[in-house]
Amino acid sequence: MISFDEALQRIHNLAQPLPYEEVSFETSANRVLADNLTSRSDAPSQDVSAMDGYGVRDSDLTNLPVRLPILAQSFAGSPPPPQFTQTGCVRIFTGAPVPAGIDRVIIQENVERDGDIAIIKSPVSESRNIRKKGSDFKAGDTLLKAGTHLSWRAMTTAAAADRESVKVIRTPKAVILATGDELKPPGQAHLHPGAIPESVSFGISAYIKANGGDVIRSESLNDSPQLLEKAAASAIHDADIVIVTGGASVGEKDYAKAMFENHGMELIFSKVAIKPGKPVWCAKVKNTIILGLPGNPTSALVTARLFLKPLLLGLAGRDNKAGSAPRQMETSMPIPQNGNRENFMRGYIKDEKVCLFTNQDSSAQSVLARADILIRRLPNAPEVQVGEKVIIYDF
Image 1 (cartoon, rainbow, N blue to C red):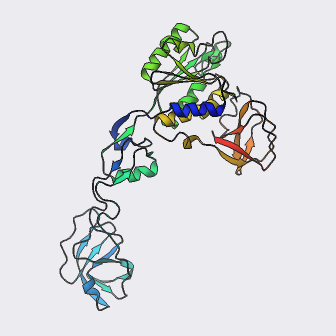
Image 2 (image 1 turned 30 degrees about the vertical axis):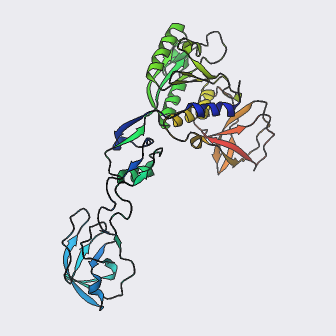
Image 3 (image 1 turned 135 degrees about the horizontal axis):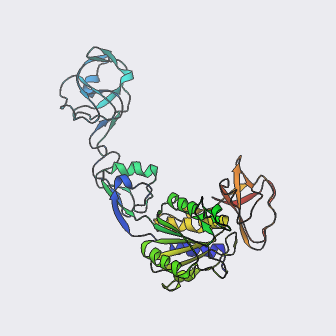
């Protein structure tokens, strides 16, 4: 049995980015760039107006006030008017091309109209209100570096590169194997004495999708060694990561690790000194990672947060340390002294303070939907008083 910190370090070392694939830009959101993204052209691609107003030549502004005929109009997305070589001005709008010969754009609030005549009375400002060609970036400039997560902000910048496809780290493919004779699909458990609804895989599936993974299938399996080994072989072949729920303790029918042993399993760790979730384990078969979660719902979800999230982030090319980092916050209630095993207690935030649920049983499901943090309590940590800070993880 190893410590939480040691187990997490092994997870970080294990979760290396998957190979890249080229996808259409429209489907690349929340992926990670596998190569630098360079711009196809200058931005702006030509001189454009920064304001709605009137484009003028400086030579026509030497004696104010001045009346200038409006000789043309320029709209965003339209070709620029011909070069200006005579006295006059162009009605121009934000983002519209600036004709050659125009030196500045005077904002419309500083111009009076008399039919097709623009009257300029006030001295012009120092600003020319023209965005020069390539002033944002030039063709070939790197807009986003390899390793950038294509968040909603980065997608806007990426779109400006004008690329129809991008190279990104492949999405981790996951298979979920829920084990146990007692498990029945929701809606059927009440029909079988001694059965319980298989609940964990639904939460784990949603969690994988929320953290950038793709669940290619989820299976509920009886405790038959032959059936389990067959499912294991198929999962190893199809998935980058296999999540096994249940069968991780020392009972007579706990087959979770055994189902992978004939496939050359390399054990990364077998138990972690935490509460809840001590039976959590991790292994590898060739290029497939296997994460074994306890069967108790709370234990399964807590260990998924602690270990599955950094696995998924790392495989997808994201920073799995920063993406699952803890923080500190004051508590609104006392927290009792901890025992000799590291504890991740379920809690919630109210009025910017940490609150603790009374029921901390590892099999409890009623508080899971309301818990939004895990409170990390180190071995033998003393009692926490109201107002003191504790270490928390988003849950």
